[in-house]
Image (cartoon, rainbow, N blue to C red):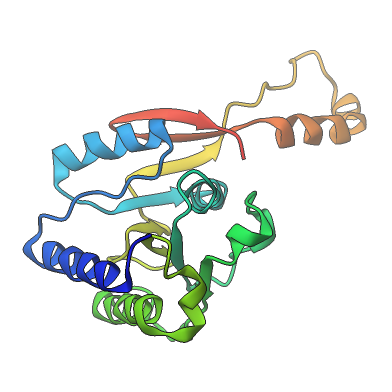
Length: 212
């Protein structure tokens, strides 16, 4: 079990590395994503995992993986969009207690003000290390901060701009012989096909598919 002093030292080391521009990328324990992130980092030296498009399914999968055994991390979510839905996580209720979510007031430009977001992340670090409200997670390793709807700071950022773009994987098109009436009648079946289709995450460094 890691002591609080050890966690504090680790947090100080991470902040120091970030300031010198040599911070390492965070591991998500999703092998395909970690390999892409490593390639992206080697090419750009940017450690942030930045996701665009329909990013939430991948965010939910990452968080569920990180807080569940055998990894059993704790993390903090800054939700500028107000769209984070904890019921979409696949972890147990016990592990869910180690996901801390804050919805900051979203004034005009606040979600693109890098210094403001960094200030909120610093507040999150202090909360996770010092506050009694996070005491249940002090025995866990803190993974970092997820920022939804903001740009410029965070370990995992999901917004309108990102080097990894998420969309539904290819869904078979209707045959050209299908009439509009037939397509309308089959719309419920079509929606089932769409819902059952996985997701594709693509970047200039490669792509992978995943299920929620």
